[in-house]
Length: 186
Ligand SMILES: C[S@@+](CC[C@H](N)C(=O)[O-])C[C@H]1O[C@@H](n2cnc3c(N)ncnc32)[C@H](O)[C@@H]1O
Image: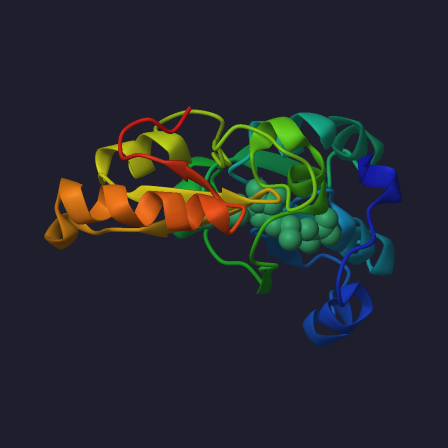
């Protein structure tokens, strides 16, 4: 899915609530495909500072930033660091902040990123594309994993010990699940 084909959730309602005004300055803390930012910039002669932790979202947003230059600024980072990120841009006060929390459809639709419910992919799930992956965390936590039809369930069962667990595994497999032992998630 391209940013242009992405349909933002509650876009009009969010912009109605923010009531952007000419000369105002707003933060879109979860830029994604830029739906909220575009709607704010289209509604008034305001400025938007857009933040996203996903480098792909920031890269895909460059044409939009050029289109609205200099009213749209893109920052790669986390909205939890908003005060520091804005301060680094020389921005003190803002007139409103929008947050659209969660995963974007662009992230969900790319199987290789590991967020998809439909397509198989690596257990990655890193919005920032760096640091420890979901597979690293699962392996470090010594979790057992069962997978069926692309859906995974994890359980922590050290109290069972190796013997009883070995007895359960054939039953899990008979139900059509694949068992993945701790530390061996690809
Ligand atoms: C539901 S999408 C936002 C869609 C956006 N409102 C639009 O109209 O296209 C959520 C976005 O928030 C980003 N995100 C998630 N957690 C974040 C965080 N802590 N800081 C910054 N961005 C974050 C994701 O990378 C994703 O691009």
